[in-house]
Length: 409
Image 1 (tube, rainbow, N blue to C red):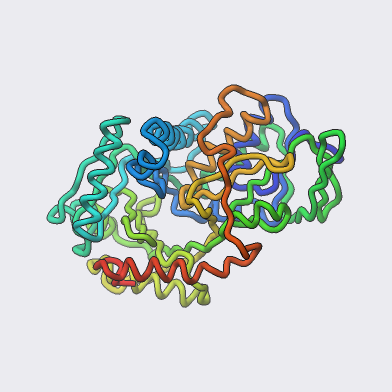
Image 2: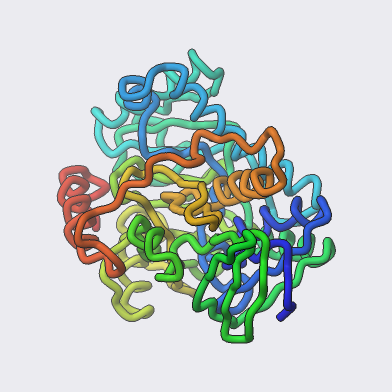
């Protein structure tokens, strides 16, 4: 552990790396500290989707904040997608990035109509292209009869999150980062001279700037922040190796798929095209890994009956986080920088907002983002354990089970 570092970043996921790289290249010394092995968290365990997803529709944003705000926010969603492309290209990261489209099946006719209306509004104001896929053509994209249609967004896609993170880590190390795994940060003590004393299980380090980039793994290091973050577990499985013919039959055009339910199902081909990756039941109380994997396998087979009784090879989880207003948040509290609460869009948002953290520390003009220094709500009586999550996800299940897709779960 060095005695001094210009910047100490707590957490070693996508956000941390995307903040560290520009800081290092601007001449700052950067120390990245993680409580676990580097890359063992959700940054490498997610589905790898690269999208403009947001939990509030364009219309909702326009009604609440005005048209200019809704346009600006959606432009930044596109910039987050572009930031992933830029990082992959500029750092020559081999991570199977494929921007060949995203299919969003709708579980009801009302959901289909609402999706079409929202996407049409986005196209009129921002030029985002899409195509509505009626029910009779759903199997052109996904081998299921459970949905009432869907939307195709041709400019989105996915990558291999483990390879992406590995490429970012390699670039940070090449640029001079000090990366320290298996190190718990126990205390942050702001000093009178503007520096921060960072106390860790390996000793102390003084820093001019400290960044918390811990997302779902945020603990009580900064209690003010912990009370505003809602950690939850997402679950995924990988099937056994499938024949190329069956993979193409299930997802004919190889697009990433995620439905529009409150607690969505998401499925895609593995980046090498040999398996299917499937996720669902987000935030539910944990079973054993074997039980969770079997529940997901049974659900996948009901959703995609052409698979037959397929076996699974792997079942895993990663810890994500949300916020009470369903916005990502970036800001500074008591001199500590943070970016987290990505609400299911960690790959593009972690990339984009990691860069914004660096821009802010460096005092650059491009540090502005609509996600910076927003009012950050909390729930009374909530401090650490999210006791309300079973009720929230239970309510989502109640809503979703009124749809054919949700009833499968």
